[in-house]
Amino acid sequence: MFILSPRPDPLGLIEVQDLTKVYSAWSWRGRKTIEALRGVTAEVQAGEVFGLLGPNGAGKTTLVKILLGIIRSSSGSATLFGQPVGSAGARMRVGYLPESLRVDRHHSARSALRYYGRMSRMSHADIDRRSDELLELVGLRGRDRESVKQFSKGMYQRLGLAQALMHNPDLLVLDEPTDGLDPVGRNEVRQVIERLRESGKTIFLNSHILQEVELICSRVAIMSRGKISVVGPIDELVNSKQFETVIFEVLNDLDAPSELPFQNWLQGTFSNIVFFEQTAGNALRFSLAVTTQQEIDSVVDQIRGAGFSLCKLTPKRASLEETFMRAVESSETEVLKDSEGLF
Ligand code: ATP
Image 1: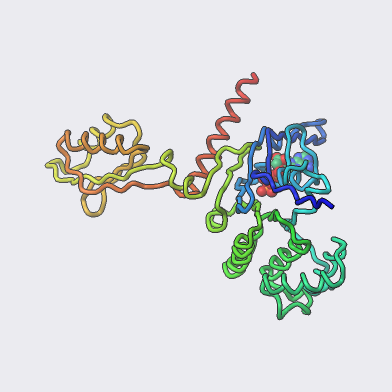
Image 2: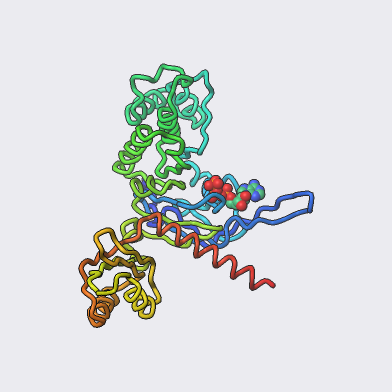
């Protein structure tokens, strides 16, 4: 007898190609269309904690709903584990924590997990064994018989993580898992996610909280107006040379009582000035948007060549927040250009 070994997962556990979604909405003016996704292409690999970041209305929930098979795309393709989204094979291997999970208030954590286990057609023995494991994992072991009415928002979210894991899925989709939690609650949820990552689960996390994404995710995509404009490992994004600025400080030892001569020179020499100021310590500080070491060297040469003394130089890497803002701004400009082309 031959036993077929299961097909190994493709490297791209989530694969999305040129995905679009157009909603139709009716108002008193008649029917209008909303392009929620405008050609999204992305890949998430097995074992990653992948963050999808974007402002309100960017299209994050629409993408998640398509991945879960809740709604259909208008065009393009999307697969999970190499199978079309929405297929039974793909759904079985996904766990989902929605943004606002509702657990009936008469439940305890244990009875809620029993309910979700039955929905997944698990046996009684499997439900009991799995519930024990998960209650331990999410730190609710001693509180499992209490009514969820008494739960804090953090405990509630951790119960939500347990329900999403009940059928032991390989991929977890978490919609704003730490939204509305206090720092303690956020930390507890983060620790559970960290344990899941260590156990090899793939996690797709949808969020607008930059700090959370920075702490939890290994890779991030920034989405704005239905498109992914930036994608990459967090370290690369925040250290991206593309958005680097350098702060220079020059001694204000000239005879002139004001900084104007230097300021005039500065403005006549560089077109990439971000700011200029006089410090309390009587130095002249300015920042330039420069991206390479050669550019920094050239600025230093020009400062010295003009007879000024450079006393300090501080390269400044962009934070994830700055990268996020720039990605959102550039996609807004692109949308404006697209719409100008229509007229
Ligand atoms: P948020 O962070 O606010 O949840 P989001 O990034 O998840 O935002 P979506 O909810 O996917 O964004 O919405 C993307 C766009 O599609 C928005 O303009 C939204 O108004 C629109 N939209 C979403 N769902 C529908 C729907 N069922 N019918 C019509 N338009 C919709």
